View 1 (cartoon, rainbow, N blue to C red):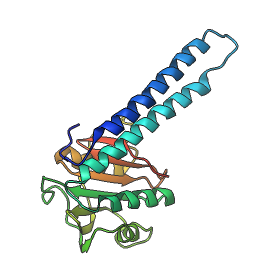
View 2 (cartoon, rainbow, N blue to C red; view 1 turned 180 degrees about the vertical axis):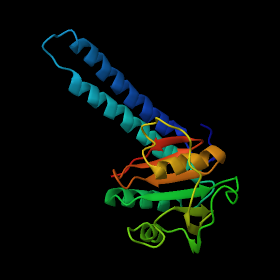
View 3 (cartoon, one colour; view 1 turned 90 degrees about the horizontal axis):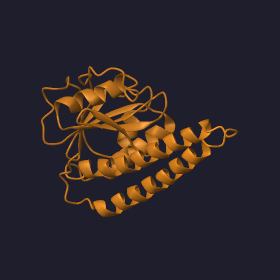
View 4 (cartoon, helix red, strand yellow; view 1 turned 90 degrees about the vertical axis):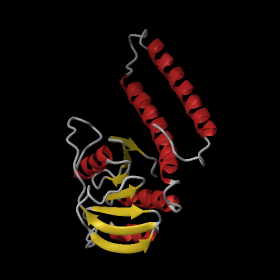
Length: 205
């Protein structure tokens, strides 16, 4: 991954990731030693290790997400608040943030909104039953430009993270542009962001 923002200081995050990985190495070494004890069942420990790695990835992804967004939108923290709130309530969402590449020819026309970015407005758009909650919101700079867009779907199959139409749309648009697409699963409440055709989990409550 490459970062275009000069506002991101990677040193603290890298230090935390190294510390977390070292702890995981210690846990894995302990797990290996446990295998020598025939009476011990290690299945539960495998799940703990898996969750540990997912937690490290999620922490790093949340940091990278803010770095990707900050050069293109001043109120990127409003997006973080929106994702956290929607995730907590399990309200599905799809938010495309235009960066350098124009998205005009890649997405189907939506309904004009033309309002400054705010987490309260975004949450109301994606409230179940809202006329605009289906489809994607398009954000350019600090403006919610429009809503109810249909995004191109990825053709990628057999990826455990691409679990539904929203995720396929998020990945599909980022395969064709440098956009960042945020997605919240209505079924699980899990939040992710897509970049360059890949999907990454982000921290939510």
